[in-house]
Amino acid sequence: MMSISMKSMNETQPSAFKFYYPLGTVKCDGSPVFRSQAARDVACLLDVDEEVRSWRCMSVSLHFETGIHRPDLEVIRDDGLVLIDASYEPSRQFDGIVECAGGAGYRYEPVERTALPLIRLRNAKDLLRYARFETALSDRIRLLAALDENGSLSVAECLSAFTETKPIAGLASLALHRFIEMELDEALIGPETQVRRKRG
Image 1 (cartoon, rainbow, N blue to C red):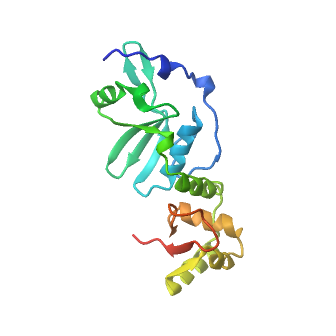
Image 2: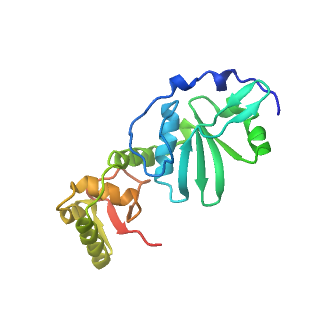
Image 3: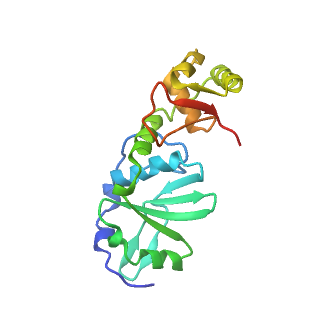
């Protein structure tokens, strides 16, 4: 294996791994434990990415002559597996990792926190606050039937469909589990945000 400086990559020990909010996830395979808020933010976006099937935290070890580096996330996408590192610093601190990951058969993507889509991230975090809720069957059927009849409804209009589940929690759960869809990139979710039934 190639030899590179591991100072910036090995300075975080397992004892420093922490839980970051929101705690709920929908596509995490294993324990959602992160070493930075940046990594948690990337994982929030993965949970609302339709091309992501699942992700895991620090599950792959890349071995060097001088040490071991565990990328923040192992992500299974529709087009294959990729390793992701999140960092507050410019991605140059990960020089050499691409080559090492490639040699081990992985694609590798460093992500700078400044490049994250802020509106989508805020919406993802708002939804994931309710990731542990389950929508009652009657509420789900009632809302999906209303969407079939009307094509789309505003968030405010959707809330009246929930009688057993807390309305916002039920709506967020249905969005996270891809029963419904709403625009996450243009503006923060509000009463006027349009909701449609997810197809395909």
